[in-house]
Structures are given as C-alpha cells and as structure tokens.
Image (cartoon, rainbow, N blue to C red; front, side, top):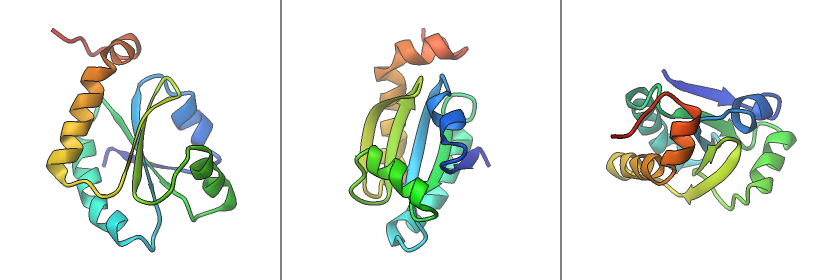
Amino acid sequence: MATIDVDAGSWKKEILNYDDLVVVDFWHDRCPWCKRLEPIFQEISDEYEGRVKFAKLNVLESEENKSIAVKHGLMGTPTMVFFCGGKTLSTHTGFMPRDRLKATIDDMLDKYRECVERTTDINYI
C-alpha cells in the first residue's frame, strides 16, 4: 500500500519537511466513519502513487498526536489535511465517498500546480 502511518515522532520528517503534495488522514479506532474511509483512502493512495503522498495519523494514539491535531484545528474525524512544502493548503472534515475524494485530490493537484511542479517531476501540459 502507498499509505504510511505517521506519529508525533515522524511528523516533522514525513509531513513538515516533505516538499511534495501530501494528504494526511487524521483518524482514530473508535471512529466508524474513519473505518469506512480507510479502504477508500488506501485504494486511492495506490492510484496516485508517485504524485501524492498519503499518510495517516491516529489522533488518539498519544498526547503528542492529539497535540498535532489540535494545532491544525481539527474538530472531528475523519479529517484530511493537504500539505505542500510543509504548509497547510486545505482541510476537509468528514467522510468522503471515493468519487468526491478523487475530485478533491484532482482539484488540489490543479489548484496548487505551481507547488507540485516545483517540488516533483510532474509537468502539466
């Protein structure tokens, strides 16, 4: 699978110091909508491999993980936050069906084309 698990210990390296586009799924085990989203998130991560990095952060795993969620203004789970070059681009809270999640990712790739082109080998025609 193309999805990585991150935590407070790997957050800076994997997310904040990562130059390309990354989407982080903030989730936890007791969230039924998170469980519904998980297979969709995994499947889509395979489709976008090499263009978007997909990461998951369990917000209830530790106090440090909770702190990251609070810092990014999370009010519920699941929440997906898009980053490019370590900067927050967009936040989406709630379950997303497959088609809507793909449309959101495509929109982010288009909207932040300059960041994506600057930090990856992807060139838009």
